[in-house]
Image 1 (cartoon, helix red, strand yellow):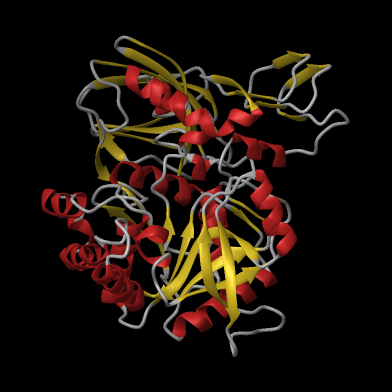
Image 2: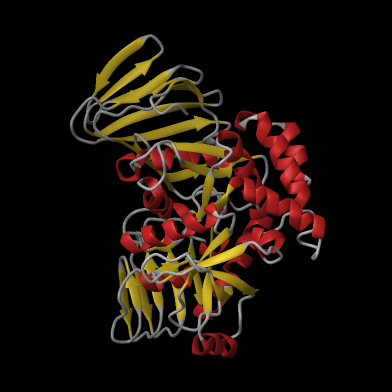
Length: 483
């Protein structure tokens, strides 16, 4: 169960509400969500990979992952929670859903936006965790710390669990969960040993997750755990309605009344059933733009320069350019992140405060927090070139042999001009081909489809004119991607 509902506000401007951090592909050329699915696709049973997101993001996730189908390598069950309520209600709903599919189901709950080493060590660690989960434990994975990180929570290991070993990997009771420490405390943890970074990954029987929620709520040892039993009850109630109804008013009302609490706070920190499996693997939660230091090797001055960048005399600075030329002189300990429609400049030690910019932009209604200018689709991609009152201009690329859905728009007409390749146009009852420097007009309300019947990319310029130009003004009649 991959949790993919976050918006990644601390990664703006690379992350947007409709293209959040998990869509970013600058870490290794493949998006973080694609990496997350691929990491478990061979370990899960057939049809055993589920992605839990929110209603607004579900279509974008489907579009994105279907465009990456060759890399993902499995079928995916897409679920939209009724409304975002943090990880405790989300995991409760996931557990209730999986329990209905299989009363003995063991769920592996993973973030969608982390960097994590895969391969033999990952598989071995996960199988140890599954073994503990079969014994009724709530199992979290803890990463062996390599430096005194202050941006992660820590897990203090307790007594080793006998019989929970494979090779040199042991499971332990959890002595304590520790909040993000200051530098001095983090250094003490590293020197003492016995402390792990809290990865936020969970392995447990779905039934045990619900039972431990109920037990935590009954004890009500902390304000965050007081509502845990209600989460289990409401999750079972909503799951029984079926995923197709989760975004309807009845489910929204019930689920939306739950407290927005992290699963760690609601259950793990108060449960006696928690175990941790140490994992000696490369890992990062990609928690802020400071993670861009992992994109490229630093130069002799400690700068990490990525993209179309020219620098003179800066040191210990991150400069990232998605497209345009960015030139810097004499900077120190700064981050410069440039995209097609927004640029951020900030001290590196204020990386966690980027969310404040997002809050300020949200207050003004800025579209730059909602979407970027480019978007992957299962048939290709589009890029917004310019937009003004009543019009917008895009480039659209359709991969060979692919086609868009048969669709219509209520609020806009479209003009298509072919720049490269040959396109096949369906317009009402007409079907015809056009080539470079030829165009087609699609009146508002007409059913239409764009197709690439050739063996090379089809590239067009689209000029849309209308009183509303949102991506949700689409009525689909046929779709190869079942959207």
